[in-house]
Amino acid sequence: MTLTVGILRDLAVAEKRVAATPETVKKYLALGAAVLVEHDAGTAASYTNQAFADAGATLSDKHAILSASDIVLKVQAPTDDDVAALKQGAIVVAMFNPHHNKPLVEAMASKGATALAMELMPRITRAQSMDVLSSQSNLAGYRAVLDAAAEFTRGFPMMMTAAGTVPPAKVMVMGAGVAGLQAIATAKRLGAVVCATDVRLAAKEQVESLGASFVMVDDPEVKQAETAGGYAKEMSDDYKRRQAALIAETIKKQDVVICTALIPGRPAPRLVSREMVESMKPGSVIMDMAVEQGGNCEVSQLGEVVAHHGVKIVGHRNIPSRIATDASALYARNLLSFVTHLLGKEKSLAGIDWQEDIVRAVCLCRGGQLVHSLYQHN
Image (cartoon, rainbow, N blue to C red; front, side):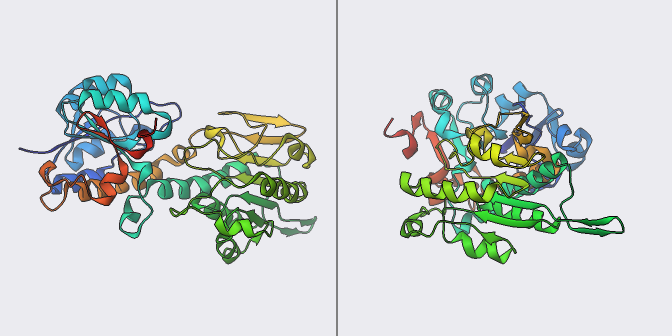
């Protein structure tokens, strides 16, 4: 029996990405699958219906796709209506926001469907090509700097003109994960003087290798500031107080601050207080990339560009979607790599090894049960 892969149009607020591209459609066909794509699924990301059709996909409507697909690919979690229309035993692969979407996962379990959450991909070498958080954060870090530059009323590089010299902008990046490192690199390419901060001491070498200076409280606690998975951990109140004092002194000298700090499953750490904002020069810009998880800046507002004491605080939703064509291309390749791995050597549903490390790490529900450790203690 032919495996059917369905691609749905994502209709979440500010979502322009799509879970497949004509390039990956051809690869699914090469695996022996039939591919169904919802009309206009990729239009917002500049992938036309005709391009999908030319690649060999069949264009269809949502309910026909849901009722026929063995594997459904999305960017964000399905809606309740999507779940209700799923084929019995269907597998849905998406970014489920699993820490906050337990009722949806329970609904999928009761339907007998399987939910595979791409953002839970383990950070191991074998899974690098499937790591959606890295692929999307990388583009988001780049785009965030461009968005900040667009709001900034001065230039980034030093410019020497007959009318005088324009000094370079001073940019501070808070958080030196994937997004932060790309933000550093982008700000440097634009000619800014860049500094960065992170609770993980391991980030110091990476930051300095990109030509930025590192701002951090020197404390033994920083040696335990990283999880086994490579994510930042919550720090003690004393450390946070001393780090905040150092940041407060540094931030008042900056023109642009890019906030990227996130802790998986937790509200974003509050790094920039109202007082810090008020200490900055008029015309300064703060780009809060963590605004969808509560924000790193006390003043930021989701989906808004607000002004406070002459400082602009930018709280754009879904920054990867603001560079939707490339974000879709990378996300689609992440999914293709994962689905190929999932189907195993047999390239079929029968070839799935549900106990394999990568598959087990991302599986939220299967066979009518919640199976992920996230839900075992709730």
